[in-house]
Amino acid sequence: MTPTALVLAAGKGTRMRSSLSKVLHPLCGRPLAAWTLQACQDAGLRTAVVVGHQAEQVKQVLGPDHGYALQAEQNGTGHAVQCAQALLADASVVVVLPGDAPLITAETLRGLLEGHGDALCTLLTFKTPEPGRYGRIIRDANGTVLRIVEAAGATPEQLAVDEVNAGIYAFDAQWLVKEVLPQLKPSPPKGEIYLTDAIEAASRAGRLRAVIHQAPEELVGINDKATLAQAEADLRARINHAWMMKGVHMRDPSTTYIDAQVVLGAEVLLEPGVILRGKTVIGDRASIGPHVSIQDSLVGPDAQIKASSVLESAVVGPRAAVGPMAHLRAGSVLGAEVKVGNFVETKKAVLGDGAKASHLSYLGDCEVGAGANIGAGTITCNYDGWGKHKTQIGARAFVGSNSSLVAPVTVGADTIVGAGSTITGDVPEGDLAVGRGRQKNLSGRAEGIHRRNAQLAGKRFDR
Image (cartoon, rainbow, N blue to C red; front, side):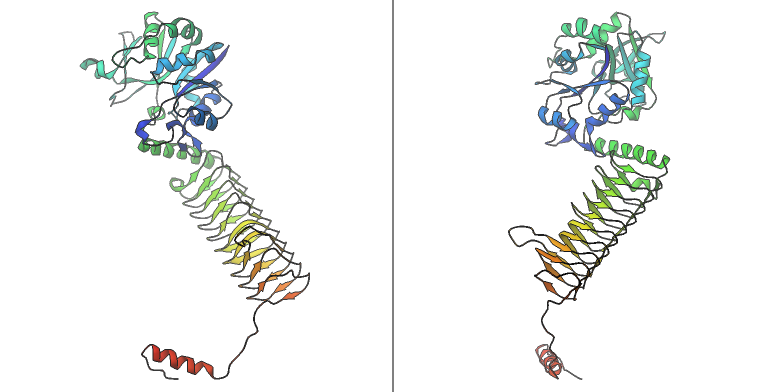
């Protein structure tokens, strides 16, 4: 028999005021419920999920690694577990917990299981000076747990109890499935079926226990966008702390945002305002400058990504330098020691080792050979209004400033393109290409133009 976690994720989450199911709201790069499921798996539990609202979307996002049960109508927690009975047939212990508890840790779940022993039901509880609407844990004089009393039905004496129910339980699975779930009945006034009835059954049998958790902030459920933001801040702090313990240098962890799937190498430097999203990988000793945003990209060892640059599905080779204020769009691949400078944008651009585009250029749908130099203001004209076309620039080519390369076009290796050229045809290897009108100097014409402009402006012209 297998210890199993049953995650309740069927609710809509109306207080989120969102069209997206509550359990799918993103937190540090993962959907909310995925954090709960990961903690369960790390604790050695097989995972099953009860879905309801947006069931197919929830299943698709959370993936195939879990069992699923459908609660078509949300009629209470007991009803949710009843819907999942088939998934619990071979379970030894079942841990029931909500899908909106992303801060729960594997260590906490292991502690719950260790405290469970031969109990029929074990509650995870915590103490708080403001118990509010939480159910109170009622114990006898010897400290034995007797029952849970909901706040709405508690006496003044019971309301003063500071130990409350966290809504996370461990059950003897076979007892729960065979003896308790078939007996659960709807409760007035809403006609819902509550799991707390199973807890009362364990109490009557004298086999109810409670494990007091010392970090109540870990047990907070997400009910609205405010608690969602606080949970993300807590998870972000965990992630950042873990990376700093591995040697990553963060100038200001409070302004550093790292998704759960990001991988950082040794001695990486992250300046304030860095955002690393998705499946980003940062190589050893790379430096990420202030206010840089990187999504699903690979940055090689010893590379520099300078201030306010944006990378999206890009690859940056070792010892390359990007920015400041550069934009590498999807499909950009930079080789070793490439330089892409300020206000350069690339898209589906492959730059060979040592190539340079230092200023104010757009390189789209192109290949740039090793050691080539792209002058300031150069653009590859890749779109003709109907489709995209490719530009090939050979190794060691020198493209002068303010040039336009009209694709499809090939500029061969060791060529020179004169500044200000519009290149519409292929340039053979080693050639000089100049594609601009011939300059004319008209003697003495400047003064007349100055006088006319001054007259139009109502001003006096003096040489």
